[in-house]
Amino acid sequence: VKVLEIFKADIDIRERLRRFYDAALDIYTTGDTAPRGCFAVMTVASDAIADPEISALMRENFVELDDAFGWCFRTAVTRGELPETIDIPTLSQLASATLNMLSIRSRAGVPRAELEAFVQKAVGLLSQSPA
View 1 (cartoon, rainbow, N blue to C red):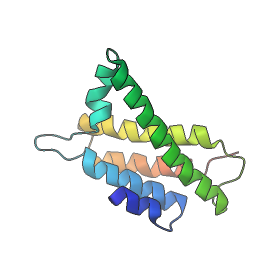
View 2: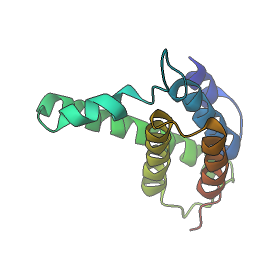
View 3: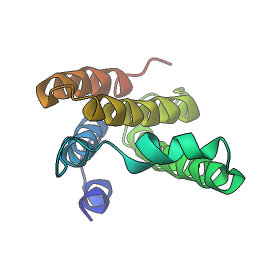
């Protein structure tokens, strides 16, 4: 539900990305015994090699995530926050890759403060994308 609220909010691209990654870190850096990361990235990905159905589900998840980020970037272009010439598909994949990296590093025990510092830099780059 928190993610839906982030996508519905009338906020600029920088704040939308920051809130999205912060919500992910809330999940990724907690767990009963250790930081959990993302289930799909941390656990299911290794099963995708041998199971075509799992592989297809993961690819579908990647497309959905890229599409969600694409909506964010298209909205930012419409609002004049990003230039019309940006490469939305590539930017969306980079935003998704950032999310996956946060999952992996969270699971590895990287301190949240270090991950938050990275998020600030990543958001800056993603929200000021050159043409």
